[in-house]
Length: 324
Image 1 (tube, helix red, strand yellow):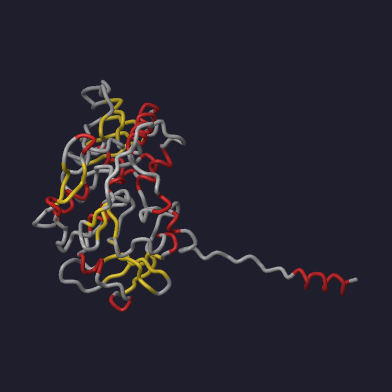
Image 2 (cartoon, helix red, strand yellow; image 1 turned 90 degrees about the vertical axis):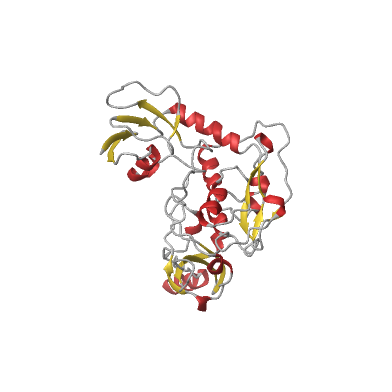
């Protein structure tokens, strides 16, 4: 076991553990944000740079600090390592610059985006973003494309985290989309206008940290905070059948995979469960999904609010006159 200290919290972790994984074991506010890293997908991480941290002490044998900030998602822990995240002003300033860079081309269309309310970039910009933009040049613009029967691609919102590429590459046999071109012209697209139609393609919607890939069956139907996420399951031959059904009243608006506290999918689900079963009779409803209290989705859904006593002003006046 290796001993590492992160923001004055010491923990022992197995060899091969990265700084980000160690921070997640500790939990709380010291966990660096991650927009591209996805623990269930191999090869992810090291692209968005939002998880940069400062290594103040390299190891027990080498007390020197690392010369530059490092990506916590891809840097393995060394015994005796000392890491600074929220305790380093350099890290916080750099993270603010990275968020500003991610928002250079990202449109401010949160009011009409289906990802609003559960967007990692929204949370990141709220914590580390600037109030005003300093960018004067025009933003990149791409037409909206249907890359599948049920998937809408908004390339304007994409931050090129590569999650969707890794997801389809590792979950299916025939990947037909990827990153085309280079530099600021890079974009996610399908090869020769192919469509993504394999049975696990819908998972690109769940792994996308922004609103670049959205569910066409849920498009503009409702805001997530107006729906109630419920754990549900069904007998499925293709996947585990465990999902979250988002209900509006007694109707199911959409179906997604279950996610953990780091907004990562616990078990990937198939397209049949996601798109073809929108009736409550198709599912066994287990109960309300546990949502972080700080999330707008959990507002008024899971806590019984005591109603204030209703005061009838006319009745009060009559009672006072009767007393006199």
